[in-house]
Length: 445
Image (cartoon, rainbow, N blue to C red):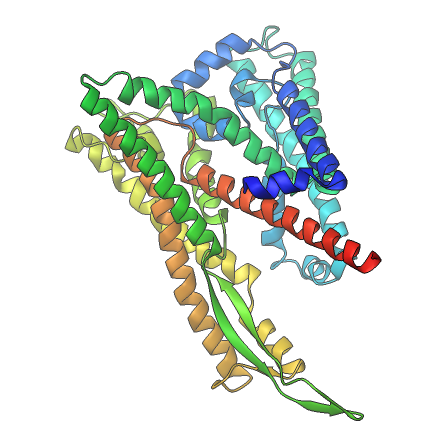
């Protein structure tokens, strides 16, 4: 990785793109420190400390959510709108046609994504403004002016970050939105590492315990990263043979290729879907003043929120608390379900079979048509299950250590998957641009 970056800096064009990307990230960090006018940031920070269930959203925004800066919404509306449009692609024929229409269709879908992002940003900022205003967190109370200022500030911040991400994609390196999300997550990690050090290493009674704690922490983090890399790069290659055909005096075809089916076909999407379903009721309840709780005096709604709250899982102190780990079982089931669901959207065996047949291709030992579709579906289902189990392991391990040992950190399985995936994808893009430049130089000579 470091060798790739070092070689990229030797190339003038790539060096400019990397420096441009870094400069844009500095702009993002500056915007995360500018507070929204009319908001009592200190009171909101205390509110976030009392609502640990909001850590996931705070982490995705690089801490700007708890500081209530103009980038408090960050790129979350854009991510949500992109996911919604992907899901609507299979439900609305017009979007499906655009998706298959090449570059022009993708530009049109990107335009729809921008409009939906702005709409979601307005809805979210209005809900936050009214919720914080009713809780007394706005300095001027719930007035038209205070709500309007907060809505305009948050919507403008989300829109500006969306534009910034597109500029990074066009003029920098990697996918701009993914780079910003990666930067937000990584910016919170030093604070988490310091927290782990103080609790398990500095707070240990003996030097042996300190060394053991340090080894366990490093081993878990490195092991998770290696496992995610293997899960991200793992694929099943299905051989495809193309029949020979005569065109004029030339013999064409007869080549062999393969269909790469990635083990983790859905990527981090199932984790985001499942996490969002669990977090949404907790977020709505927190704005209304209802908190997860247990015990005889807790209401049914509070107990249900306790089941959905990840901080309640894997608590071995007592059976009364451990029973709320039922939410973890539901969470894993949802991960597997969404892995199959999202894969069914992005990979269509029937369409792949038809394209192969049109090009004169076939899978050795499998007849074209329905047998090929059945074979691809069978292989895909087995691969998706392996990938879903791998995703579940990545998501559950941080939750287990958090509940059992109190290792509370903002980054978890979702964050590690995003970090590893974005870094690998960005490095591949840098290497491909270096390769293209190498060939251009060879041809020009």
